[in-house]
Length: 228
Image 1 (cartoon, rainbow, N blue to C red):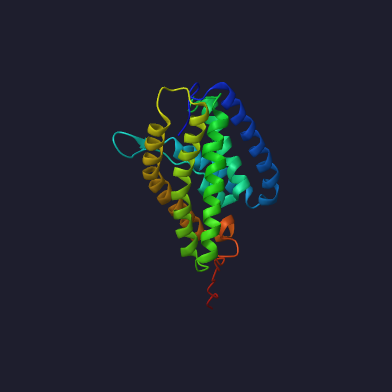
Image 2: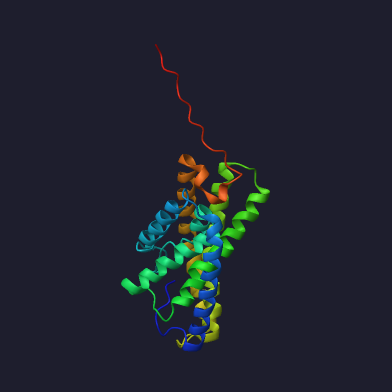
């Protein structure tokens, strides 16, 4: 999913960069309402987890591999605005230090892997919570479905950008078939990782899961009275 330099032409890359800057600016303003002394450390941990997870690839099909995108996971754990910032920071560090995704394509990568995954994933998540029973199991199930949908949505977004400014001598139809087909499978891995992570945090600190506020009851600590 990381787009390299030169894969998208300069005008479209510049336009994508402008959209990405605007999206990050909106996220910076919105994150002020999501972050406090309690949740800020979790945002840092979430970004670190996504960074580490994106460095690990899992086999998909026909010799291809995939990795966690993390937008839906970040949005559910720390909020959609902060989630955009977490993934954007990860992409910036990867591009600068590891040449994972081109710097001229950073705007395209932020749109695909930060903005689209968060908007689609968190939107699906909130819609599902409206119709599912209010329970931790519902939060986990909604996390799975939201992450599953967000990955092919990012692939569709890339295909649209490629249709406008792609430089490779490959038809849009072939790109769409390859990207969406493979990323549906990658979405399954993304969904499993997201559901397991959200479920794990819910089990110990449900109050820290942004998407579960008002849904999952806080854990109660039962202390046995001291015996004489």
